Image 1 (spheres, rainbow, N blue to C red):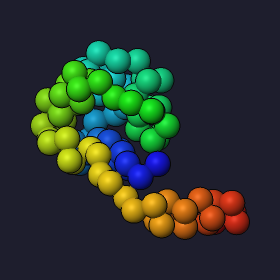
Image 2 (image 1 turned 180 degrees about the vertical axis):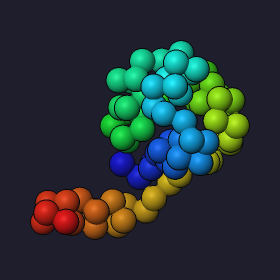
Image 3 (image 1 turned 45 degrees about the vertical axis):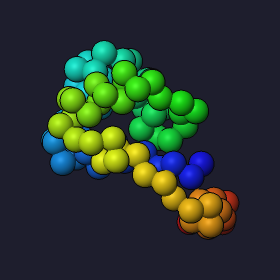
Length: 82
């Protein structure tokens, strides 16, 4: 997917665990993991707003667009065992 999720980067900057973020945002750790790992197909604006409030950041700090070529290269590397 051309949208990359950088929640883990913000978690590290804020020295916060996934469990703590999930509790403070009001979602399950499992749903946060789906979002954090880039497997989510959608995110509610209310959830995005809560993430930004808790992490004291902007949506662009959590989500970024990547060109399709980058994604294809990453998938090729994963398939090759890299």
